[in-house]
Length: 139
Image (tube, rainbow, N blue to C red):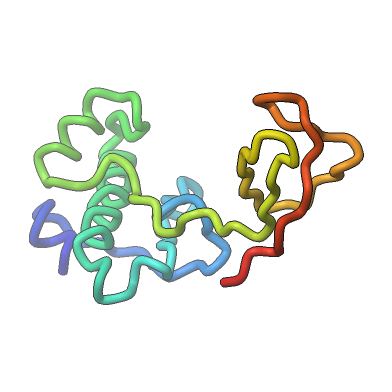
């Protein structure tokens, strides 16, 4: 339906959600022409982003089947993407979670980290003082 509306050509292969996609909005497979979409974009608040991602992957699909430049760097792809209004990049969905909060014992500089630090090894980047685990960050 989207393919017919924006490209005037049918999408005759399969598309599905792949929950293993984490840093990309979607993926087009050259070998069997199927499209995978990140299911995080299937939520109602991301409907515009989902449409942009689907249009982006359909650009790859239709250009590849037509024998034209389907890669991101190809002028054919850039022109087609601009013509249909697809998104160039998928928007970031999550903000990195802070799990550990460290404070310099000398100057008070704060450090938020996703991974735990070895306070015996690492020092403050501002003054060289010792770091102390203030408290594990709570979600």
